Image 1 (cartoon, rainbow, N blue to C red):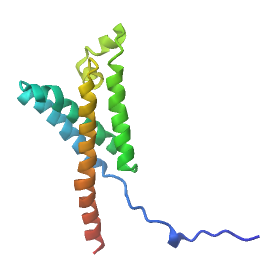
Image 2 (image 1 turned 90 degrees about the horizontal axis):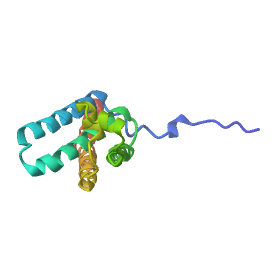
Image 3 (image 1 turned 90 degrees about the vertical axis):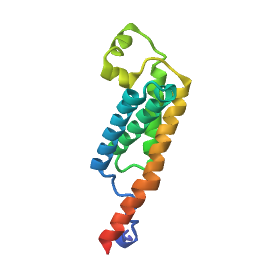
Image 4 (image 1 turned 120 degrees about the vertical axis):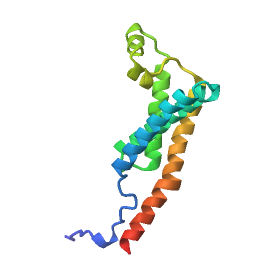
Length: 152
């Protein structure tokens, strides 16, 4: 019988080390605060009131999922964030008394929303897309730069 041995030198290195939870936690909180401030400071502007808050909400969801799914690909995190956001929006089509009572609680209302709006789906796509671009264009290159600097 031939023994099957595993040559550890041929294993692929981990090209995408885990995301930094501190960074993604901070990004989640900063995005949450930006959403509150956009409503507080610029809520009189219809565009900001109707669209920016929803895009920031989805961006916050992306960063939150990146925090939780720290070893998953950017695409997997984006799919999870967009799926969650769309599911919440679709749930707004359901209006039983018990869930409408829950929606009266401010914190729960921020998560569940009130009514289904088609444009929110576009805003969620833009928010998650912004998170993907931020990760690919800014966060990953900075991480790779830091890793290269440590090796020198």
